[in-house]
Image 1 (spheres, rainbow, N blue to C red):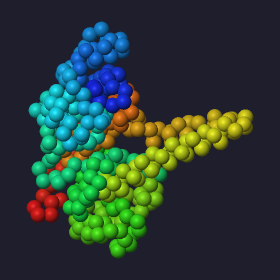
Image 2 (cartoon, helix red, strand yellow; image 1 turned 45 degrees about the vertical axis):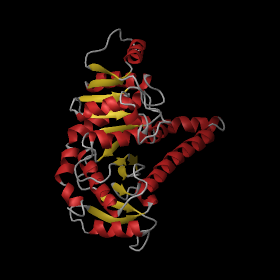
Image 3 (cartoon, helix red, strand yellow; image 1 turned 120 degrees about the vertical axis):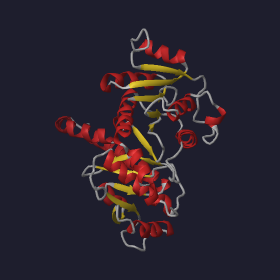
Length: 336
């Protein structure tokens, strides 16, 4: 299996993508294509102790870089020789099985939509991070790709998230919940009320109804469906609370000798909790609905994050997720 990595995307590029590729090559035996400025990539390989390009790793030269300040809607067109555009073209042409970038989210989504294309019939691709819950994991879909949605978009997100939970996470009959401000049928805006009515008509979805954010965090569902605006707010709130809790606990355990001893005793558990909220441990977020696996790694991804994103891309590519979506797209399209 071969994975393309945007070697120039992210805060720590090209170092993190190159070193992450080397780690993944060693861990998974994955074949890698690094897109970017050849001279810069070779320099990073040399810093990592590689006097020549290692076996299983290729370089696809791309002299331009899509910057965060570039217009996401036009960046990939204006910079046709960028590491992002070159990589997506290689993916479209069947040269690899997946693509990863830690660069501009908007440019990646636009490029994936217009170059790699969506699965036929899918109205909008969605970002679907896997967030921790008290009982396991939950697919949050969407979390920022589509701030404004229609009921049909959310209907499709429910199917997309359910397929992802089943094929990638191994959840046999995932429970689908609709994020709302209450569980009652009349709660929410027209979007939530109309979407709830649509989801109740889907016999192939295990739809459990409206669910509040606090219940989702407790493990009340396996797939949490929402518009990208609300989903992004929820995701960032979870990240913020995790950071806040970590800082508070650190301060508590550093107060005196006794608290330091207590902290040492619970340190393994605290580290496990921290790892659940560490984006570098997760790897990235899948763009579901694109015709080939595309993974958005966090902008501040280090080499460990890139390594894990490669593992995630391999899982998605091997899962048959895209084929499953294509086979059932008519069921989630209103005017099919």
